[in-house]
Length: 206
Image (cartoon, rainbow, N blue to C red; front, side):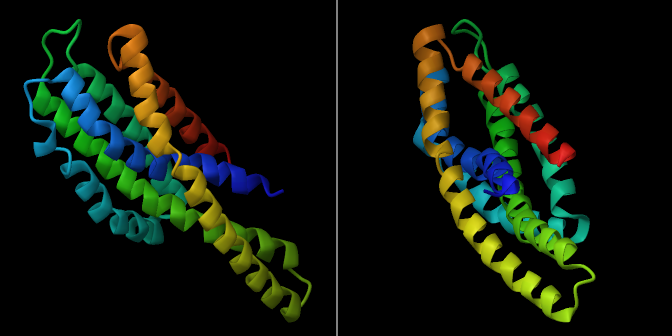
């Protein structure tokens, strides 16, 4: 029933979902777009980068605020996808694998940072809501607000993680559909840019 539960699920789908989905789909893209490259030689790099960088997202959010970090992180993710599009082969020709690889490492980095920043937003968001509702009602009400906020935040952290995990299904499926229907993954990537734009708008607005 909490509006912000669903908003944070959407944003966490954009960060954690991207991390899971790109981890699953990265080797598929290498194999389909750069068949001369051994995908297994590079497939492990992205998940490693995303996992290692996640604590940095939490640390930055402690210093700057989770919403600030998440906002600019989604901007970087949208530009990262544009970079991937730029380095993909066009019409089965050209392309630059190492440019593609760098852009994907940027996406894994931002997905990791975003994991930390959006995760940081949830407990702060619910604490602020409950404290505002309890303001001026006495110490007991304020203490109860903290307890209620902690319970809700814990539930939303778990629920949003479950929703975010669907990125592991959506992203590889999007690649497969785009490749089968249009001969390449570009349309799926354009869809991801639109999705990140909605994340940018929602983070700014709320």
